[in-house]
Image 1: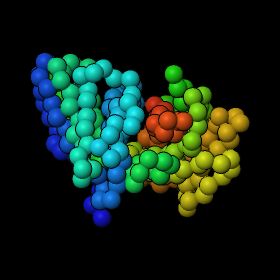
Image 2 (image 1 turned 60 degrees about the vertical axis):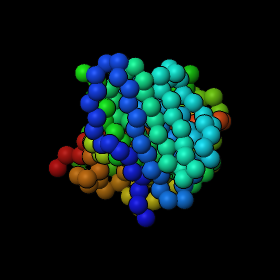
Image 3 (image 1 turned 90 degrees about the vertical axis):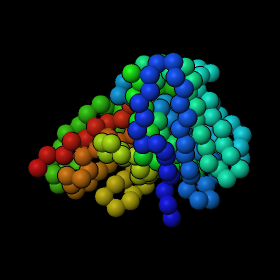
Image 4 (image 1 turned 30 degrees about the vertical axis):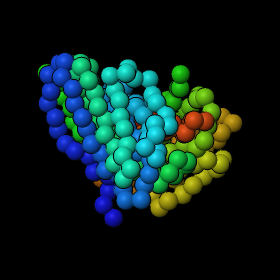
Length: 113
Length: 109
């Protein structure tokens, strides 16, 4: 069974640009969560999607948005990039909402110049 | 806000035992997860506790006391490959996962 796939693995952008990151969950998993990981802040929850609906949202500005498609694949978009957005963005999937463990992808490392 | 505290770093010798503590003060509790993350890799699931007590999985065990807001991960018979960051995460009432900053464990020969 293929794991969680995130593309691209690495991305370099400049301030003010926007970026879209993609996540394909494990087959059969319907819940997808996004996290930002930085050395100073650790893993910070961005949002969670289930059945194409955002179910939970973390404390990030509106520049961070996402969506989920009918096949459970998810995308995350960051607009008007800032230097502080440089981080590892991790996607995790689980079968549905509840207490099953989340399975993480390898992440997209975003660097802002 | 959510407070999930764990030590920043721990060092131990190959073959030894290490206990990583995690204390939490959160708005609600629906279980506690432990993840392992090697440098440059994705976090991988280790254990889950929702009731008080000890859960054992091979060399790894995890303990939970909900009344004390406390958990620990016990790593036995340490191997060099156990050098990694260990993340404690609490599932909140709204089912968000809130993570601690992680504990970097270094295993020395």
